[in-house]
Image (cartoon, rainbow, N blue to C red):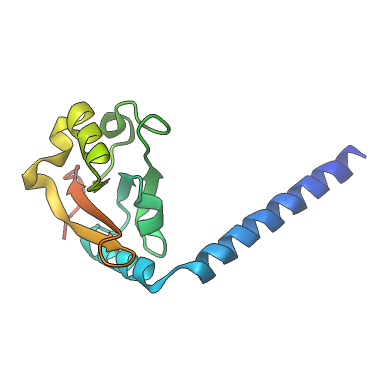
Amino acid sequence: MQDRKRLIAALAFAAVSGFWYVKTWTGTTWSERNASHQFAALAPAGSLALGDMAPQLALGSTVRAAPFQAGLSNDVRPIETLHPDIVIVDRHPAWRTWWMMYEPGALSPEKYRGTVTVGPPAACVADMYRQSVNRTQP
């Protein structure tokens, strides 16, 4: 009986995961695909990107992503804890303020790598900042 419950739970998990995977790939807009391509061109292959938009932008690329949301996930010393190569920061004032208060050196002008836009004209604009120099940067 226990094995049957585990099998049903595993099948349910696989079905739900498959549904979300298919929904994500079929529902991705051209704007999101273009943003992923822009992002991949700016970020070194195999690097780790940290930010609220990192997982979305890393889809279809060789860049690894870690989510970040102030007050919710990975917000305790994210640079020192995760050692990201790239930090992606939305231009919304609340996001920029958090980074400037808690990781002031992360957004310095010399670390700026480029800007990625997702959605209709300027629906979401995010800036990328290099954090590590361990990998070859484009």
